[in-house]
Image (tube, rainbow over all chains, first blue to last red; front, top):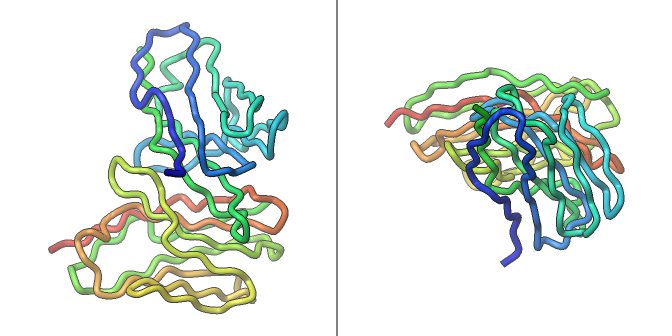
Length: 114
Length: 112
């Protein structure tokens, strides 16, 4: 079944650790996005990609980095986690024929940095 | 850049009442306006969308209206049910951008 997958779903980690949040999609979409969201609150765009080898920063300043080596895979990396990074991270993709702008979201990763 | 304002931030209604959520946008070039519903602990999901060449669109109990002149669009939910309780986000984007600007969200609470 076509979907967007995120792992891990929950992560508790200590300050200073390097972490990578995984996102993969089987939707066949070319565009992918990362959002930061405190539960039920605003969606803040932190990174996006139009396709392989394309990455751009979003509106929210972030200390994270992303890569897009394969169409279906868009991992987000925090080199040194801090308590201020505690939040939910949502991955999304778009690119359906005819509805290129509709975003499909993954289930999210809830990150707690101690 | 685009700016999307969404009101109200919280809306509390009785089951069976109607609910209306309003959004305004600033960029007249925006031409795609989706609405997403996010239930507690779940991912946002598209519930309805409208393009700038249409003034109104309905899907069962949900409708969206667009006023291009005034640059605002609204979500209408009739005969609300407890399962409509969620956070609703409006968004606006323009052709070729694929980067939506989201509103801040409206928490809708439907009391049984």
